[in-house]
Structure formats: structure tokens, C-alpha cells
Length: 262
Image (cartoon, rainbow, N blue to C red; front, side):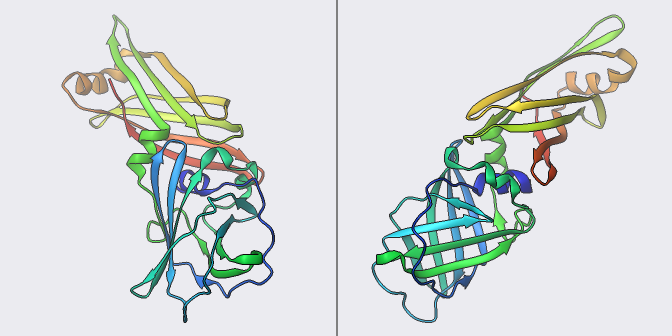
């Protein structure tokens, strides 16, 4: 889920004073993201150890993703040892600026600086990462779905000539700005059979709210019979699809794949 990983890492707001001097950046080797809650992420950046000990007195930090500047806690949590440098911090997703939508998640410039007195950058890490590459960015996909995407109240009720398929897709937008979805496509399967395939037109994801997409549709019995039989025998219903988001540089597709909850 490259888009889902790129959006969750971005933030901005208060711009720190510019550095008087910038330390030569260490090559950013990878990022690990943990979902503390649906509104807060914990991020770890990894780079090689610096050639010598960094200057003491780091009392602030700053992070940019593309052109977006990310407000971070002033306390700096940096570990250097075993040939590696690590910077750990939390990101409040409500602070994310809309500018983050301009970042290409497959080629995202990331730069972090540990700042000393006078705004001098005494330790820096930088690199261009692909948020879709788990070797570069580790994102706990199950935790992401648990926090931001649900498909609940799923039922299949047979009638005389049609099958009623019901479910509720919930999408939580943790950011402080509205996101426009141009469309969503979903397919629900049970076993090897398709229960229903559907498409919905565009809608808005309100800031810091859950938006619900209702699936309540009658499907011809012949089309849904195999999936209904598999579901009633205990096969899990799986949801696959795509959520398409509008950005300043065109539409970006977020793949969806999760299990329906009865």
C-alpha cells in the first residue's frame, strides 16, 4: 500500500528556523513505521553511523518529506552504535499538510536533521525512498487496515430470485484536511466464487472522521449462488478493490484487501 504508507509518514505545519550550517547527510537506509494509534505513528529512521561523534547539544529536530515540513517533538531520540544511526520520533497525523499529496510515494525524498544551538544541523540523514518497497519502508499492513479500513456487518440473504448482499466499508481519514476519492471499486469473494463486484462514484473523506460506504444490493441468484453457498458453509468473505484518491499530480490508487466481518 504505497500510498497508504506515504500519506501516513507525512506531516507539516510549523517551520523550524533554517539551519545555519548543515551536516553532511548520512545515506538513509530505511524507515520503520509503527501504528501507535489511528492518530499517531512512531517512525524510526536508520542510516550508517557518522564517521566521528556528532557535536553535542542536539535540542531539536526537523523532518521533510518532499516539500512538506513535519513538526516533531523537540526532544531528540538518537541512538548511534553497532555501525548504525537511528532517529525515533512520533508523528501526529492531524498535523499533516495537504502538500503531502504532491509527493510521489514511489520516489519520496526524505531528510531528517538533529539540530543544535543556533539552528545548526549537527547530524543529518537523507535519501529517496519507495514506500511500496518493504526493504526500504516497513509498514505493518495489518495494523494499518485495523486502524483505517474496516468492512463490517456483512450478510448474504437469499430470496426467491435474488440475493441481498449487505456490508459497510469504513474509511478513517486521520489527517487534518479533506481527501477527495474519485471512485472506489470492490469485489467480494467467498472461496473461489465472486459474491458481488461493484463500483461507487467519488466522495469526500472528511478530516479526522470515518466515512462509510454502504453496500446493499440485490444480485441475481445465478450470479451469486456459488459465493453464497461457500459463505454459508463457513468460507470467509474477502474484499479486494481499489480506492482512487485525487492529488495535484493526478489520481493515485490505494489497493484494498481485507476480510469481511460478519
